[in-house]
Image (cartoon, rainbow, N blue to C red; front, top):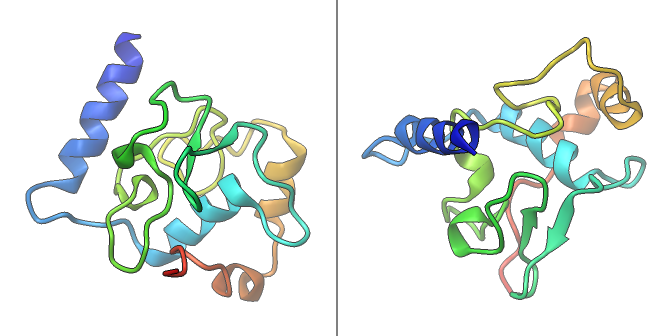
Length: 127
């Protein structure tokens, strides 16, 4: 419990008062790690919010709240925007990424052609 509180505090501190966001290329890796794409399945911990088109991580324990939604619309700040953000599965794009941890989804993401990473959408399309 304390480690989760420290992780949350680090994430919010990294955002700062200017709403600093993670580099776009890192956010794309995070999106692939959570949502997958047409060849990578979504993370088994990805949960659908009660709000349409919103998702949250079911493994981190934060629940379904506006500030825990993984992606936002347009420039809206979302959880995957935090510069310092950990992943319970230590996946690519997160500060606790562990290249030695063996996971089939992680290995597929690690071996993706950089062009496939570049075409990854990092926001929700406005409806």
